[in-house]
Figure 1: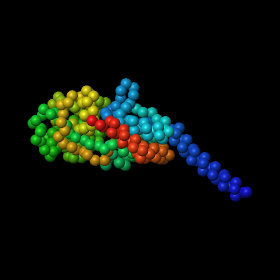
Figure 2 (figure 1 turned 90 degrees about the horizontal axis):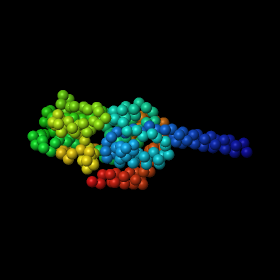
Figure 3 (figure 1 turned 180 degrees about the horizontal axis):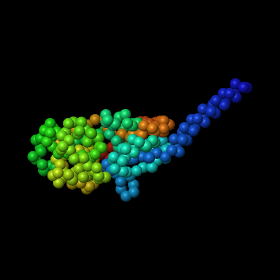
Figure 4 (figure 1 turned 90 degrees about the vertical axis):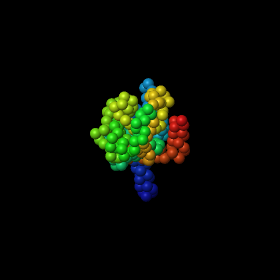
Length: 255
């Protein structure tokens, strides 16, 4: 009888501990941050939408986690997630410089970045990549992974304009349209989506692919609680296995 009572007490203790972990994870409100980056994340009125947003919402709902979603300039989203526990960020490129700075919850989709120029700039048409590194003026977003890649590739820093505004990616396009820069980096799907939606004119052509590997991810602050990380990763795995992530990707990247 005494042995039975000890076993019962042990089982109750373990159940209570596990229940506390799950309840604690469910009660914690996560701060989830992203930037304006259509078709992956964008805002219409007061609603944040997009391919990545759909996946992230599904993930958090499946994990039964409370969350607050904010769209802010990239630098603020990045620095807040870097320094604030229980904070998530998406759509973030997983680079060599970043890989040890976050917990990586799961991949959203592949990542490709090209350098675009005005189609009318035929004087640039025959420029080689090596010559572009030396001579070309590039407008890029401060703190963006594309800017990291451009610097890593050895582009002349004197010719690099880093833009910090909240509408930085569109300002990069305007730099090129106004002749202040020769190229800007962008994901081809993002540019095509903006052209199709009438946000930017169809004036550009891609000349150099500077990145075509790995992908965009959902990531978390390194001090995020382990029970939260576990339910997020388990939920991501189920979404991937059920084909939900691929279905959402195909819906948005069908053009």
